[in-house]
Image (cartoon, rainbow over all chains, first blue to last red; front, side, top):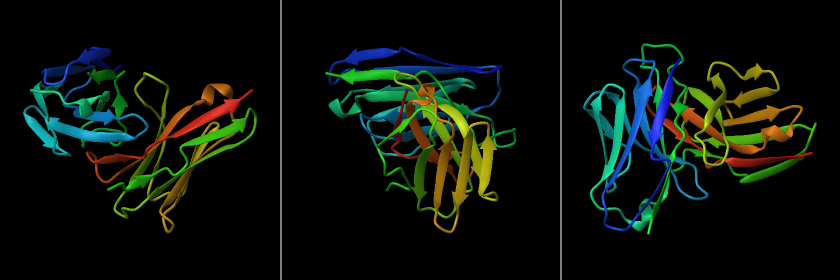
Amino acid sequence: SQTIHQWPATLVQPVGSPLSLECTVEGTSNPNLYWYRQAAGRGLQLLFYSVGIGQISSEVPQNLSASRPQDRQFILSSKKLLLSDSGFYLCAWSHPPTGPKNYEQYFGPGTRLTVT
Amino acid sequence: DQQVKQNSPSLSVQEGRISILNCDYTNSMFDYFLWYKKYPAEGPTFLISISSIKDKNEDGRFTVFLNKSAKHLSLHIVPSQPGDSAVYFCAASEGNNDMRFGAGTRLTVKP
């Protein structure tokens, strides 16, 4: 069966510090990978998605970036955090377009980021 | 722009009664719709989905209805149980990669 891991679970970082959140998926190959952010009282905002190693699509302009160095690893980064970067960050995966149930996305446990 | 809207931020129902959660969308190109359930401090979990070629999909206590002409879908939970208390997100997809989520509706089922 497939599992998705995210860490850390919670993070408190000062403004201007760097950020690195990691997500890994087990039990599947060539998944689509996604980073979402849920700000307080708001829905899920898609930040980045990736259909393969080194292939990143950005949905919104921001000071965040994403990388996919390996097939089942997705990293969310920032060089300098802003207060507005606080939120709940979720990684998700879905089957590749040629696979079954390709519309359903499966989410990790999330990272609560507080920028102080 | 918010292509998927859940206009009710919260809903409270009595145990055993029906819960109806609503969702509206603006993009007529969406071809797949999903509902996710989310508990605090956890990632959302997939609940039920419907393709745009259907108008109803049922799975146990959960039924999703799709009205394409009105660009509206709803999730019915019957009978509602206290364990159903969570935030429910409506999502719509155009193709495999582009999924848009609503802001969520917090459902509270009272014993």
